[in-house]
View: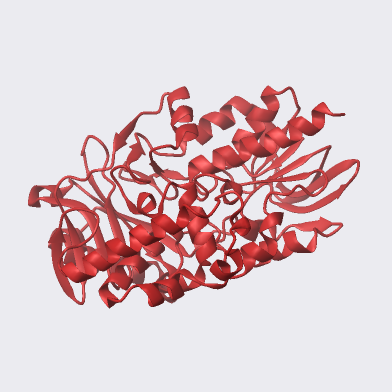
Length: 455
């Protein structure tokens, strides 16, 4: 039994398979486990989550895994006023939506509530079964907002929320996809909220810890630095070919045969693997047309969370600029301060040419506008450009454009002979999140276990 991918999905699939008595090997392209969840220690000793990091209500599988391995959680800091940058001005506000323009705030709240109601009608498991699926799938989130939200300021607020959640522009997302995705997390409002929402809790010591512990449990069944380049499959099983790093240096092809294969990776990465015979057209087309979001995550580290002394929460939203959303990412003991920001969508692609120094300068200028001149002088600054990471190709999640779900959605989880599909994109609840990755791995493993029981 082979699992490709040692993120949370692949590791949980492998452990589930091993617990059922199946021999398993996990093949990972990177030199680490965790996939899109990656915790780094800066030279100055700050813990920063460069990828997925939060725990929200109803994410029970992730919560149970943290409890199993003794990883504590703490609330994302919220005390104080939030900051809004809009139309070149700075405002402070409390609550989920800025209040500098009351009419825009009312429009934005009404739009979020309408999206919440719409998403409850769309199955997160099979959104293409909605009675009006074709029409919803032909629209983008952007076109729906243009038709249903009158205020430009409110439209900007919705765009900021979409960029923060999906790493993509509203014009890039099928409305049907966005609604099913939101339903899987409870509602659109739940995805953008901190308290009571998807960003409610953080992990003491970072979110990668449980993946590392899972890999330790699996031991030498996890093989790193071995990008899979090809899969041959048929009635008798699979042969997986990886480009494996050698102990003495260099690389060489490595072949592993098995009866079943779990592919635990986003569609855009799976599309770079050669399959023989070729995958069915719908599955191949799905992989070709589901690009990752485009996002860079930045952390500015300070000696202390100085903004708290000024009555600020560390949260910021903006209608323009590089950083459209910022959070207080300081440790629970506030031994130092960290501001976390997202550069996403078109802006992330445009700023690729600015280089690390240019993006740093732009980000710090915007942090200083939000939180004062001290924000321009961090002790450390990090960035993680997920679109430049070849084994993720972007983040935080694959983005389904118009027509894809109704055209190819049924191929998302459908096994192809001995090949089964995992990864957070295939989850029916909390798709795009760590919890969804966990459940998708367990679901794919259960499919294999069921097949093994019939032989």
